[in-house]
Image (cartoon, rainbow, N blue to C red; front, side, top):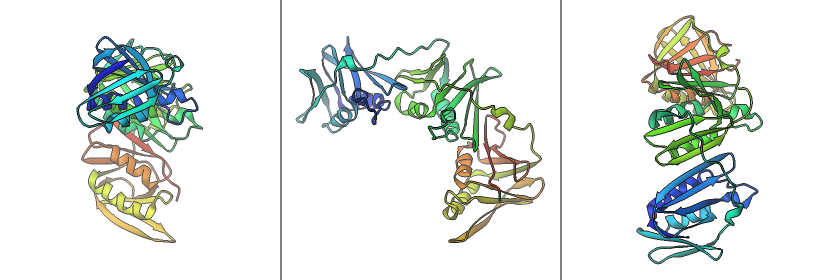
Length: 359
């Protein structure tokens, strides 16, 4: 196998496929990417058996063939080459990378040892705007758990809600729900959040196809494909946590609230809650730590309802307000012991439910 292509193009295609590579995998072969050269193109595949990324690049093919190269080393070697054409050649158990002077040589992996991953199944795929989809994933992924001991909570749940696509995630302390009303879909499945976080950097484009089968989700664009094994199990019944209405409502400028949360977080850190006293004319944020001190400030806002004090984890609160894509944030609450609901003013496509901290 021997090809020639521009350095920057090779870095892009190798790097994107390499995002799926299992860096800490006990199987050495999974630390490599499969390069398959046929016709006029080079196809690169990286996988950790749960997530697979395939990318493709038109290159000058000097000799057809296949090889498996160390993903990180090969990508960085090409990146460090001088600008211009780079040649990658596999022969005699070695992969040689040359270009305008420098030469790298790496031992290649055995092609037959690379996992036989199935081609992505795009049956029933729906097309979505790449930017809208990436925004939606960013909004909901923040609420997914990172605790592998609870795998059901480490994914984003895809489902059809009245014919539109809905994405949901929760770690049991907060819940994010985002609707894509412009997308007519009949999909259902729990996709690992780790795979979705790689989507924008691996195959993100102006338009993405989304398909969910019985065992695997597939995402495709002009830049390649990403497939992810679905998480098995039943996603929590989140609907029962979303009451139809709230008696108390705060409407506050988003940037002003974020700045106040940031200042309060300086004292709160992760383990001390921020108290929100909701009252006529706005909200008072306060934090007290016996070993440090405290911080208090008032943010002007519109509030209707009973005056009360409710407390939230500072990081979770900041994540929720940050995820809102509107100039004004609405916080709906029932009482200090029940979850609060954050969303954008005049925007029902995204909601963020947050459990309070008992005072």
